[in-house]
Image (tube, rainbow, N blue to C red; front, top):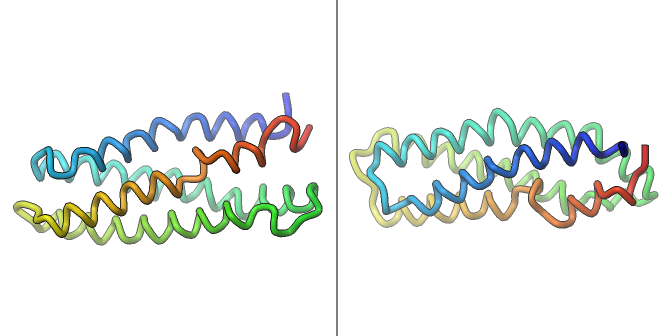
Length: 143
């Protein structure tokens, strides 16, 4: 087993949740407000309770080690930017979630904002990105 195998396993466990974000984004405008609220609440809970804490651990523990092993402080810069984008989009989703909680229906503007944020979260979720897989690949760091 390599040093990074547990991280790769954790990333693999996160991928189905990223798929739920896609389902939520795809459902905007196609399902009722009650079902949409549930999808958005579940998406926000995943982001706040699992993905962001995971990203925080990577920032504090993994990335400094990767930078040191590779001898390149900038080696994890793009992944750190992804984490900041996920944080910002999660905060925006929370605001949209609060609007949906007060709404009886959603308009085109709210639907568009939800899709933009949810699809942005999918794109920015580093656990699915090729660069993160390369960074934690078998050849990058052996334990």
